[in-house]
Image (cartoon, rainbow over all chains, first blue to last red; front, side):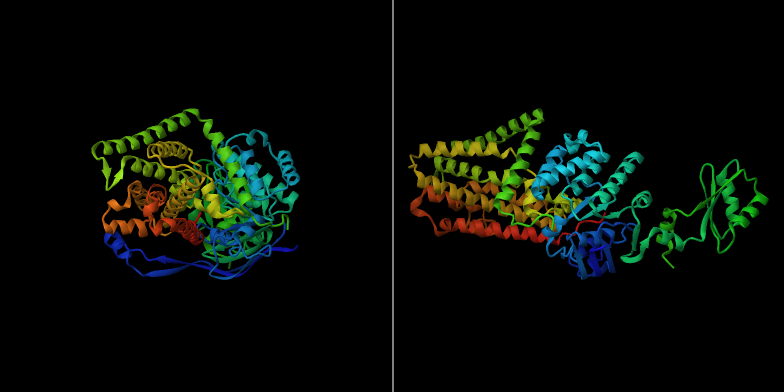
Length: 333
Length: 271
């Protein structure tokens, strides 16, 4: 698989004024030279191959957006090297822009007042898409989603879901080598999320487009990404496939039990009995996250059975969501 | 490479602008009530401006040696030369909101000139009414002053109008671009826009200090006064008037560079 993005030891620092409190502080700030350096991205290296879908994850403020801005040529790294399809993005922003497509969450890049098809036609001119490629792309879209009702609707009148869908279609229109999707499913309902995931998957398959996806929705990751990269406080924590990631926490399993009335209160008791495990409860089930290196699930169940009347039980492997949550909270040991 | 990179010339940009403009007008017309009300508003704004001018001259027969028709010409000239900034560069007024909210970043992902892409998004049709009023005013005062009319005069008129437009555009670009560095740049933009009201008076009526400011600091004297001298008083044209086309181009270039510098320094808010 040829590499399409090569990042070597990039660091991005911002100079931030140390702000003081109150009105007096604000006045002092006017003349202040008291800056601190904030390192938003710290010595990150990675390479991404043509056609991959990569989940780029991290808690808020981890440095995800900064990295993406550097890959799209909006920001210049403080140090290190980036090559996107052989170009240095910030040196040649417009040339790089020809090779990429970007969707930034809820910020539509389409012309607000224009019907979608007119936006497409302007994009066709901007990216100089030949007629046959353009028509081919529209045909492909038509086979994947029901675009005809959207084409003649002004973007302003669309629902959030339709707008996101349109933005994604617009980002793929010039058949870019890489598409950056920043939280594409944020705020959407379940069926729209599914539709968008299917669309991204199909476009990646059909066009071999590399997709870099940042999201907080593990449903997106499970549906689309083979590989994930996790970044926090500017540092790279993890770069490998999801199965491997689960291996880190493979010794964890979730034991769910149902114990009749008032699970919240029962969970409280269990928490006292099993202080070494995390216990949570919903309307029906009580979940115990068991670290099998400390105790076998079957033993925990046996112990609980002595004190509680267990009506039903389930055993779950740890979900991606929980793994990511644990990494955000504790890091990779 | 999927598409061969050709140089993106004037034709390329004109085509795109034309397309955006045509679509934009079409969608504006479809909101009929909106369109009619803003047209009426525009007509009244122009009439009000004209009435205040007329009242002024009911009381004074001339200002510092400038007669009614000369002043009228100056007024019309400033209306016409302020049209391009109104029509084509109105998005500058929204720039600070885009920058503040972080939405400006959406302009950075297209393979075309950033400045062009940003300005192309808005065409303010209200400027066209101003243009019509301005041309009417110029024609009326021209006829009443018995000025000669030939191809050379027309050429001069057009060249100096374009010059004046360039100056105003440059001022507005530079003022709008301050938002890349300071939080509330509205006051800067507003200040520049208020200064333009002085453009319709001959700069000689001001004290030497303001004359200096309006010539070299906020060069609004170039919006109507210096260029109009070429038409109105060909015998007393200062060297600055003849230089104004060059100055206009230089100013525009500088303001464009400031704008683009600000835009590339821009890093966007996190998301």
